[in-house]
Amino acid sequence: MQYFFNWDVVWRATDKLAYGLALGLGMAALALVVGSAIGLGCALVLTSPKLKVLHRPVRWYVEIIRNSPLLVLVFFVYFGLPQAGIRTLDNIDSFVLTLTVYAGAYMTEVFRGGLASIPARYVESGMAIGLSGRQCFFFVTLPVMFRIVLPSLSNNLISLFKDTALASAIAVPELTHTARWINVQTFQVVEAWTSVTVLYLAVSYSLAFVLRRIERRYAVIR
Amino acid sequence: MSATATPANGQDGDGIVLSARDIHKRFGDVEVLKGIDLDVGKGEVVALIGASGSGKTTFLRCVNMLEEYQAGIIRIGGVPIGYHDEGGRRVRLPESTVVRQRSEIGMVFQSFNLFPHLTARANIMLGLTKVRGKSKAEAGAIADRWLERVGLTDRKDHYPYQLSGGQQQRVAIARAVAMDPRLVLFDEVTSALDPELVGEVLTVMRDLAKSGMTMVVVSHEMLFVSSVAGRVVFMDGGRVAEQGSPSEILKNPKSERLRSFLGRFHGVLR
Ligand SMILES: Nc1ncnc2c1ncn2[C@@H]1O[C@H](COP(=O)(O)OP(=O)(O)O)[C@@H](O)[C@H]1O
Ligand SMILES: [Mg+2]
Image (cartoon, rainbow over all chains, first blue to last red; front, top):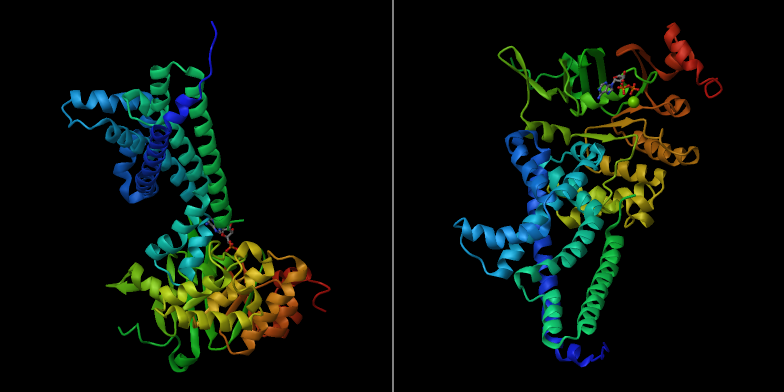
């Protein structure tokens, strides 16, 4: 059977592709930001002896999320929770929620590692000039940790962006879903999937490029 | 009891900056400090010498309240720090009090410990703004003055990783003294440096000593000790074993322990 290339189908879908791309990036960024807040909170809980009672629930959260396929979590939240009587979310909200909770678990590990890798002597020299424990945390520990975990943060952003492809499984109109739409509408399989692959690649690559520059700007440790 | 206002040893209270009495410190079952007594007068430079493991670092950390200790009392300017007496019981002071007291004592560490995310200037400014409540402009001016004093004006916007060990240590000294502490503790501040960088740090410390700064200096730089210290204290096994003027201690050691310790520095000291 002969295959006829027709790249027009891609050009005609430009606005849909652009929207899909923006949606994917937006969902990933939101998940990273809110997920980081969750992760930082959980990491602080895990490193605080005073909050020992919360260690086990946080551990469970991290373990469950990290040992489940994201797609299963996406289905669980989108199809499962409404069955269990929890208010129905539309598909985009549902996916963002899932991705955020997912990112939070991974960011917990990132921040916990970051906090653990800060030598105690930095905090001690903060105390030696008379900073309180709280001031040491905000002016020394936190900014140093932020710089240590920056490379992990940018890797996670790129991973999350690629993970947004899974949202197509619940019909979120992001990039992968758009490719499938072109595919189904026009039967131009090669054009549809080539174009989104190139788009994923180009965006991930430029994102990595920009993030590396930011990292270098802040890489003041060692 | 009016313990809080009573000077360290009766008559000459004003002149005494640090007074430590019978400090005992255990790590688990191991007693590391076995009753240290030490007085340091205003403007005095006291050198602490002694073999590795004799408790010099631990003692300095107790003075700066970075370690808790089980017995004894340390006064700064006559005021007990770290602990107080509560109906006959020895109780750790509230953290806020300890923090305030600690800001009166400067400490310079062997491993520099500059804040890695801040420039040399910002390292010095942090305590001035956050602890002393000075404005950015005021703190910046003080930082610039100290950077000039330690010869690093042209490095003020450099981050620690862009500075040599000697430069980092000079910034660390500037950061400690810029807080205008009553006492500065130096813990082997040249031990981690390449030999060719030791001199620039000792020069800064010599300059501070001359300006009347009260200093307790743990050092194995015997030439520096003999020329700058007013008094040398030899620690051995968690006790003060001998003390006196540099010439007494370094040239005419009484105990065998001190003689054998000094033997290692043969050639440096005649
Ligand atoms: N955090 C600690 N835990 C247990 N033992 C310690 C600790 N810090 C120091 N020590 C022990 O206390 C003793 C005195 O150490 P230190 O004060 O560092 O001596 P110095 O500074 O004179 O070399 C050593 O035997 C050391 O092993
Ligand atoms: Mg030591």
